[in-house]
Length: 179
Image (cartoon, rainbow, N blue to C red):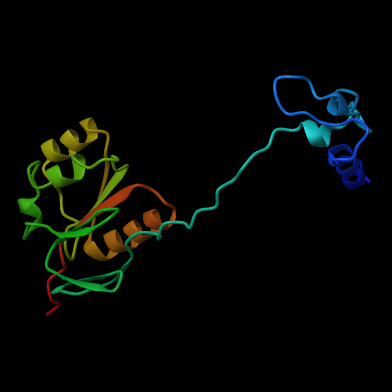
């Protein structure tokens, strides 16, 4: 019906006639638009704010330590030889050979990261070893919790923290070969 009305108003033989220019068009001045229904507060469905939720593919769960040996580690399917630093986005070689080599300088990689890690899991080889208290105090002042364990337990702890989506990192020394 609306199409018929528009066609009648715009047809050249129309009684109302249309002019283009600065003058008001008489055919359109008499037509008033009327809504059939006025919206009110009762129409809450129409007055609600529109929200948009973007669904993004979740990032991978991070690094997973599958196995360890005296030669190194299998981290997310990649073989890493020797001691390594497992960081949220990467796995790096770590230049320590023994737990006595763990110093403030060797841990600088972990406290310079952004975003800051919450917890650092250190695997010291076949058994849990004591670290220099100055090193632990330094990391505590930087706001990083430290968990020192033997390497098998450190691997399991890191995997658990990663599965909980915690900002965790690991410094791992492979355990020596069993004799």
